[in-house]
Image (tube, rainbow, N blue to C red; front, side):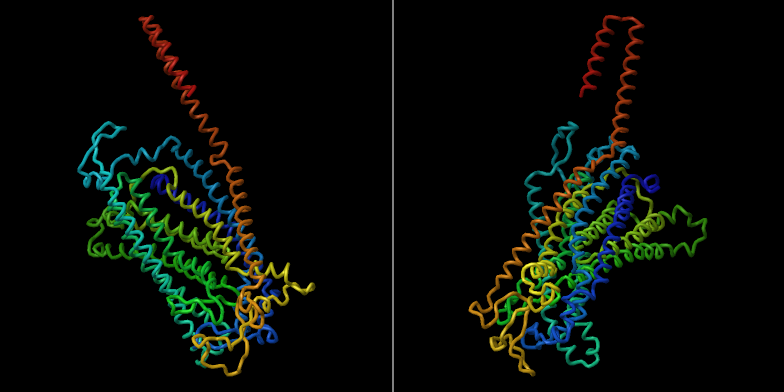
Length: 624
């Protein structure tokens, strides 16, 4: 229906969005099952049991999480967060990460088949989009004063000298680099915020009587994580406002020759900006937070002032889940509100004059003309929104199995919002042909490959799965309950008297002698005091081995599936060949009939030569 009314370019978008939503149903069901597995096995998780046990977690004194202002704390204060962490950090995480790597391949391969079928049904098999884009952009013709002969058309046409192109590309590259650096700087500012306010949250919750009843649920780590995620989302929305305009300005400055070049360049710039803007905070939490902390007495500092963040004793995965949930859900809610409300308000404001004019003075076609303009880049923003969502459900899905379910719910609403706004809030755009989703296909392929790497690293370095497996098979001494004692094994011992003045808390009311911290280091009475133990190196080797094995297994399965599934369905391929055969047959019969008529009319000698030459040309064309 959309294709018949709006043309193939808009039709292919809705076909892709509908197919993407259909495929999300399978991922959402599997993700929900993995989440329910974590929910039903929460009470059986030995790690959270030990953390919550007053005789185990209640007796373990942890080292302060910030300098001077933070106090020693008992491990069982993180009881609730450790239980929530198990919802996403369990054996189902590994299964779901591998499943999503295969799901992405199935989605892309089956979409190629659907696209090929639509291409045939919409009579676009012989349509070359490049031919449509050979027409020069008016802006290119207006700004390029020099001309040269086109080797294809043999006509004089304007062109941009190579030196001018080089200068423009240098300025464009420098501008892109500057704005990407600005995104990274904003992310660093959020990190500094996290480091600076953690002590404030810890002190506030300790000294405020009204907050003490919820201190078990709202820990300083969780409060810092949630507020930082919200702050990061606000910064993302603000930067997006500028990046859209900057990307268009840079692309205009480059003066692309054709409409296709313009669209492809703008797409790559906007995607680069959005990729860094939306995913940088998730990359920080997943791969950097808690990895370069040091240990008590030898902490590492950012700018030699703020101590680097540590992960919760239950791991950093729950914080990555929090970050992903807030940014992804916030973006989807804001995007739907913006898409539905903004054009409606603009049209409502523009229809004010209709209230003062009778219907015969403000006709229907005038009302339609006063609707919002969809614009040449209208579909560009729709694709960009969905591709960014695709990144959330693939790049970091190992930390949040419910991400596909959120995406599915959003897309069901998205299809209806897009349909409603296109038919009621915008002028009918000029129909245009398109046989594919264009450069977005290559972007999706790239993100599918990157997702295998990111999820392998998340499972290995962000979750606690590998350390638990190493303990289970190599270090556990309890045959009846192999995971018993894991928490005590994963925490190293530090002698409080070794604290330098910079790190030592202001108060030690209970005169603790030792405190524990999350690492694998020798105790203070060992000859290799505070150096990494052999278990640390075993775990590191296991993590690296896991990454290599998982990547190779998933990539082999991906490439095998891609090889097994042809891009064009067999029946479509047969129909295309059949049509080409019939076309050649009709042409052959027409030429043959025409030559026979000439033979009957006379001039036999010349016509026979022409007949033989034509037969030769047709035989040659069939052979080619």
